[in-house]
Structure formats: structure tokens, C-alpha cells
Length: 332
Length: 180
Image 1 (cartoon, helix red, strand yellow):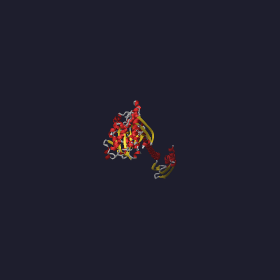
Image 2 (image 1 turned 60 degrees about the vertical axis):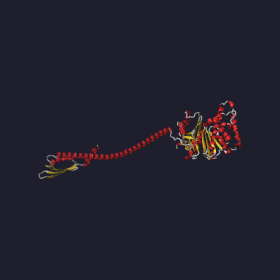
Image 3 (image 1 turned 30 degrees about the horizontal axis):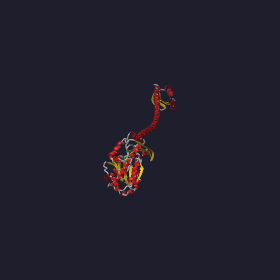
Image 4 (image 1 turned 90 degrees about the vertical axis):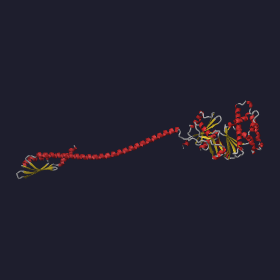
């Protein structure tokens, strides 16, 4: 009853690999009065973050603290039927959440508890799965034909294949897990000579490329001009001036490139898994929708277009704002 | 819980500050209501007391009227008793005086005391003895005196003396004395 007389304060927290972003929206009668976003160079709830959040918590008793779940043991399953869940994943130690009675999102109970304990000082009201954010972000697009939807975070990639709003396949991948492998792949790359993805021996050894060649639709792929553009990526990379001895800017660009390449590899692996996994009906994916929460995923689009011949729709997403939108939906 | 793994904490508008303010106002309103009720009760009590007092006053007034009437009656009774007493005293004194008046030579055979008079029957040796020794004092006491003589066998005279006092005048005098 009294709720209408109070502000609603949505406090949204996103923790990535190096910083914590806190986004606050003050809403009164469905009207946004104030938006504040502040980035803290910490991964924990230190005094600075606590004081900042506490200031907004004190504005109204109707405050909602939301956080994006970053548990490594999370994912999505294309069913809500408990009898079918174990066909896809062992979810005995997970918290399950049925979304729209069509598909389920799950996360480790222990990690969820650990997350709540980490933020016990301020308490949490909502913990959202990145798949939920992804589904809400591409709500309109998901009603169409089968497509791969990707949410890029700093450390994670959420991949989900939806067909007519029905989840078909999902993977939640941790970028750092692949770092060592990717480093191995990129360690010997001589920037002077450029990076030709086709020339990387390590990549050639990966089975997934063989698997890709099995796809009938790609049999005549040589006809596609863009395929040769892969060389251009190498040329672009080689255009980086190696003589500049990798100042900060170049170092950052290299990091971005590495991260994008890691993501590209993960997407490729995931698609390969989807095509080969007997649990799923192998349907060729032509369209990819990317929600980029990192702001650095531009190169990935080129890779996907040029290497995998996918039609890519790229959109930037403000993760904290997307969490806020989902929190609003949650309390409706 | 449509999209979140956890349910939100229950939100309430009753923050500590609001609880304090509400507590303060509740206490104030409670005290005002309590004071109001106390005053209403007191007013009712006073009204009731007032009604009781008015009733008592009315009853007392009636009692006073009654008492006044009783006092008046008693006063009248007292006056009457006093009058009777005086009258009796007067009568007693008159009778005493009367018997004192009777000389030894005259013998009374009967005396009738009337309300405003005296009738004496007796025997006297002679009319002169009566006239000198009894008639004179009687005339000094009574306003009207009538005497009849009858000769007795032994030569003496039986007499009947009728004496009257004018009562109206006496009463008027007594009333005048009371008013004084």
C-alpha cells in the first residue's frame, strides 16, 4: 500500500575480472528519476563500494539489490521437466529456475550461497543468470528461426541457441579456462608476419575444424569470397607496428585481440559440440546475435563472419542496466 | 521468482525512523485520546454529580419547605401551648385569687368556670357582706358582673354571681403582646 509513496531504488552489481560496476536507478511511479553508474577497481565489497551502495539503500525502504550470477557452475537446460533434466545435466547440487515454463536456468547451490555470504553485509534480492539477461535482451529476435545468441562478459561467454523462443542448447564458458590453451596457440605467432589463422598448427590439430568440414552446407564453402578474407585478419594484425615495442596501447589491443580470439575459439568449439552432440538435433546455425557487455567485442564479429560465415548481429549491452531491467520485470 | 535464483527480501515501509515517528505519533494520539476520554468521563461524572446535586438541592428545598411548614406549625403549637399555659396560669391564678377573694363569712357551694366567665353559687350572711366583701373584688376582675340573691331558711341569702370577661378584647391584647 505504502509502496506507491516511496521511491524504488534498483542497485545493480556487475563484477568482472578487474572491477565492480554498480548501477543505480531511482524510480518513482514508473518514471526514472536518476541514474548513476560507478566503477570500482575492486572485486569485493570493500568499504568504498559498501558506502556507495549504503547511500542509495538509505534513500528508500524499497530498494532492490541485484547481481549477475558469475558462478562457473551454471547453465541452462532446454526443459523444465524434472524427469528430463538429468538427460542434459546433473543438477542434483544446483538451484533450478524454470523460465517461462519452457527452459531452465541452473546454478550451483554452494556458489549461490557463497555469493550471498559475500554480499551478506548489504544482502541480495535478486541473482540473475546471464541466460535470463540474454533471453530478455533478444526477446523479439528469439521468436524467429534458430539462431545462436551470445552474451559477452569480461570473463564469461553465455551461448544459447534458441528456436522460436524455445531453448535448444546452452553453454556457459569461462574465458580464463581457455587462456592457457589460447596462449599456446598464440604464443608462437610472429606479429611481423601477421596472423594467418589457417597457418596455426595448433588450430589445425583441433578436431573441431575437421568437424566443421563435415557440415554439408559448408562443403562448397570455397565459393564464398569472404573465406579468403581470413588472411586479411592476419594482415590487419600484422599491420600493428611491432617495432613500437608494445607500448600500453598496443598491449591493450593485443589483449583485446587475444580475448576476442579466445571467444571465437570458444564459440567455434561450442557450435562444434552442438553439431556433434547426440543429445541435440543438429541444425545448422546461420545467424548469430551478440550482446557485447565488454565493449571490446567488435573483432569477434569479423571472425565469425569471415571464418564461420555466420550472419552476425552485434549489439552492445550495458550489463548493469540489463540487470536493472530484469529486476523491474521481476517485481512487476 | 520469475527470473531470479533467490527471492527478494520482504520490503516494508516501516523503517526504524518511520517506526520511531509512528511510535511518537501513536503515543501522542493515544495520550490525546486518553486525555479526551478522561475529560469526557470527568464531564459525565461532573454532569452526573451536578444532576445529583440539583436533585438533592430540589429535595432539600422541598425538605426545607416542609421543615418551614413544620416549624410554622410547631411555632403555632408553641404559641398555642404558651397561650394555653398562660391562659391556664391565668386561670389558676384567677381561681387562687378567686378563692383568696372569698371572705370567710361567705360560703361557696358551687363555682362554674366558663370560658369567659365565672358563675359562683354560695350563701352569704347578708347582701351587704357580699356586696362589700365579694362583689367589689369581682367587679375589679370581670367586666360584667350580675348577682341574684335568694333568701335562705336561716335568714341568709343564697346568691348566684355571674361574671363575664370580654374575651375579644383580651385576645386582641394578647396578640398585640405576642407581636411585641
